[in-house]
Each structure stands twice: as C-alpha cells, then as structure tokens.
Image (tube, rainbow, N blue to C red; front, top):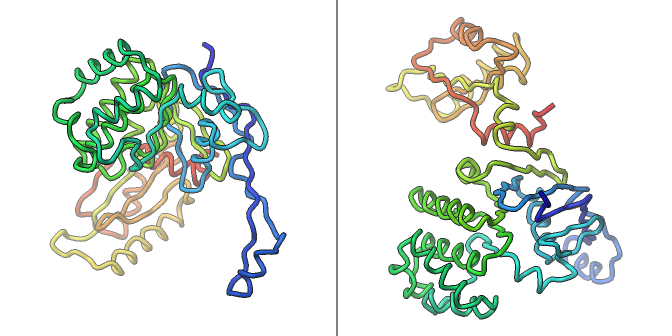
Length: 347
C-alpha cells in the first residue's frame, strides 16, 4: 500500500544564540555571533499508511512538535524529504492545508463569539466543501454526537470538553486525508476523555482518515493506537505495533508490597528509608535491571524481570527482613514500558 505520509532521513537543526546574563550581556547579545546548533530531529524515516492511527510519543523537548510542524508545512526540514498526501508540505503549504486537519491542545480553531454551526459554515467556505459533502458530514456527525445541544451554542459558553469535541469535528469537516491531534484530551475528565476517544475512533473507521496523535496520556494510546512511534532527543527509539511493544517487556511484573499496618501509616521519611532498605537488600542479590525498587504512597513497588528471576524468589528475599501485610501483582503498564524505552531499557 502506498504511504500517505513518508519521511525519508529527515533532520531539523536550529541555530540558537548563546545568551549572556545581565544588562551588559543583553547589549552584547545584540551584536553577538556566538551561536550553537540544536539538533531537534535526527535522520527520522517512516511510512504511514492511509487509515492508520499512529501514536507519536516522547517526553517534552523530544522533537515531536518539530516533526509535526514539518509534516504540516510550517517548518522546512534541514535535510531529508517529506511527502504528505503526495505533496511536499513546505513547498505547497496552501494545497497541503486543504488536505489536512489539525487540533492543537486547547487552542481552538472555532470563532469564539459565534455559535458552532456558524464556525462550521465558515470552515465549509474556507475549504470549499460542496453542499452535498457538507450535508453528508453533518448527518454523520449527528449520528455520532448530540449536535442539537451544541450547534447553536457560542464557543465561549462551552465547557473545555464540548469545545474539544467540536474542534475535532471541525478538523474532519472537509474530509482530510490526515488529521493531526496534539493532546486532544488534555484537561478533560474521565467521561469526556472516553467520549472524545470514541469519536476519533468512529471518524477514523467511517472516513478511513489517517490520524497522527501526540499525547502524554497513555489512556489515549491504549484506546486508539495500533502503532506507536517513540522519539527522544530527536532520535527515533521505537516504531512498531502495540502488541510488539507489550512483548518487549512481557516478562516484567510489578510487585506492590505493603510493609506497614494500614492503621500505622508511615511518614515520608520512614517510607523512603523502608524503600531504601528493600532496594539495598535486593541489590545484594540482583542488579537493578532485574529488580527495580520504587515507592508509591504507602506501597513499595518492585519491577521484576521474571526472565531473570522468579517473582516468588524476590518475595521470599523481602520476607526474610520485612513483614508483608498486603501484596498485589500486576502486569507492566504501557506507560511503564514507554518509560523504560526512554531510559534505554530496550537493550
């Protein structure tokens, strides 16, 4: 299948002034030629096929936004080639804008003082959507959400969740080939997050729209993405499906232990000392890649690689020095797997 987006060895560098402190330094900066090169994106290649929902993940400053800006035509790559919808984005910004949709966090594309329906009509004219196609989209929207409660309400009177939902509808209105969603559920409650995710899923299925999702909410990733790409410090660390991601650390389990009576809750210092004691105990037997100890409120958590050591062996080791009042064993979460990839745990 021909990819709808192709990145071929794409890099982006920025020249940044090395600034000096104080008033004298500020004046000096006006005439300074002291620059450094920041490598925001380093030789990234990937193909994205029509209809995919791809999670594009990474910590703050990883290079996600820079990559998205290059795909949308806002930035020109320093080297390499990008093609989106058969268009080189930065060379044909207007044509590319006609074929993509965007939702960037809490920055709305709707007109603040107007009812949503009026914003939709303006967008219809901007994107030159034919009457029949516009009617079909509005009918489709009506089958998915309660439009009557939203369409005639001014944007300024909407809750954040309602506004986000309408922004997503607006992004799909002209039937784009690709929609970029940047933190679409940020700041929303659990119920609204579920509604937004369901809407994105339905629109993707109905229109076969390719969706590029950047988010820090692993609930979004688990609910929507079959494939994820992970970037950190400009380098691509991972590009594969969610099932393969889970299998990467399939042998890991988290053992949560309560080492104090519930009625005798310890203070922070006591709990830190308890965690340090368990960590030192296990460090004598296994390295940190086998048993990593952390603290979560009153619980001591041990991340165990059962490919190297059985969970019962770790549990018995802890019991030798500490009384266990309660315990819980759980599979490693998607968030924990991704954190380990950031930390270089794929080796």
